[in-house]
Length: 196
Image (cartoon, rainbow, N blue to C red; front, side):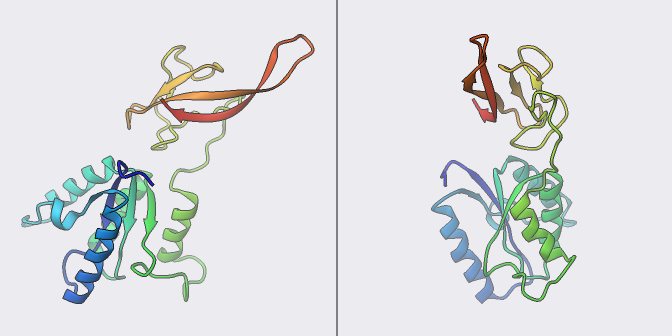
């Protein structure tokens, strides 16, 4: 893991016992060894009469996060709201084992099963690639709008680079030769996007 990765921690803030709060704080300190952690309890100003500004501040922090960790006591509606924002923003998530309900006792369709499936499969739906096999979707945030080659304006050339208008990251398409054709021109195997 990379200490430069930004992590937003979804966690209960109100209505929890001192014992639970201390356990959560210990877990967050552990996460700080690996990530640049944004903790809404300490990083978001909690003085807000309605909670609207808190939700906006958390949304902005979730947008900037590379990954969203989830600590949920099964009760906090604020956690559910933040999870909804993270899903809408197509963020990678990491439920913290021991601090999120396990799959035991949750058969079939349930919120808990959905969150664990989200962790495993991601929030970004599979995208059909173009004829040349390139997906026209940002590999970072899942944006499909305007994710095109900055050089040829199509995203269809084998040497295309692309910039996402949402997360502002630039990617290059990697093709590796895997053999030579009878004409002496190398054939290429498309591998995927990588950040440049």
